Length: 341
Ligand code: AHR
Image 1 (cartoon, helix red, strand yellow):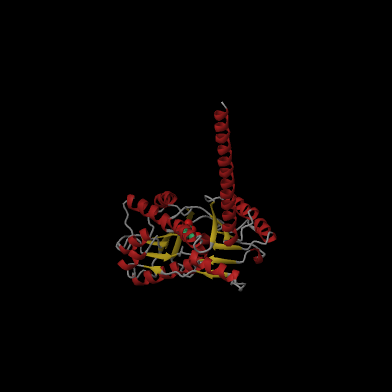
Image 2 (cartoon, rainbow, N blue to C red; image 1 turned 90 degrees about the horizontal axis):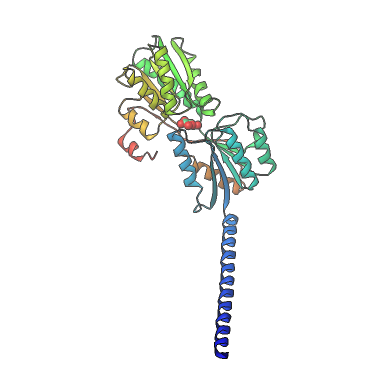
């Protein structure tokens, strides 16, 4: 009886010691994880990125470029948010970055207006804001530190100047030319800049008739829809200017379904913007006449800007990414193989 009791006491004792050991180990384990998580945030630069959406191949490439730049390996902790084309979602994301006290806010504004209040809030919280891809229209430029992106007006002018040269080459420079324009998201920097740049060249040519400009929201589905209405309304279109490749894909489908032909050997001249891989294939095949590049690889530029800010250096208000212009004459197999997007 006594023996039995003492055995039970030993077993209970052992169980007690083991439980205590486990609790102790567990609590140390949790402390380590917490400490590590804390250290992770402490040692890294925390960046909140609000991407405007995923409407195009270009946008996907832009997102990948940012995600590949702000990695743990490079010393960053990235908080990423996709606003799905809605300004209200971007405003929410930026406010949540402010309440999380991130070190930097990067965002690609879906449209140019409507940002003053939230940018004031970021400024008051002492968080530097960097614009990516597109710009904002604010009176007080101190509300953001810098903008990394394209010169959209120059892109539009490049398109116009290419058309001038092409019409001379085709000996049509004094003939009447009917043009339709598919525009991107209304009020976005890319739409505003490309429209203004192309219009500046078109204004110099009384024989260029802009039949209509219509928004197709930078998407392929809308591009096809809008092009169909253009084709019904205007039987004599000579030139299509489409402000991004995705809209161009849709527009070309609509044109071909209508029985008309496009490109170098076709009867409608196609001007596109972005120069994503799929579109460059079509340039090489003579389906798209010219593609004005818009460079989505902005992650590296943004890294450099933050490095400079961390080093206390002064940064410029605007950094333009490098961009080219592609026709059947300079799209090589090598270029196509190198294109990652
Ligand atoms: O702002 C850049 C534009 O946005 C790209 O041309 C387009 O594809 C994207 O959606």
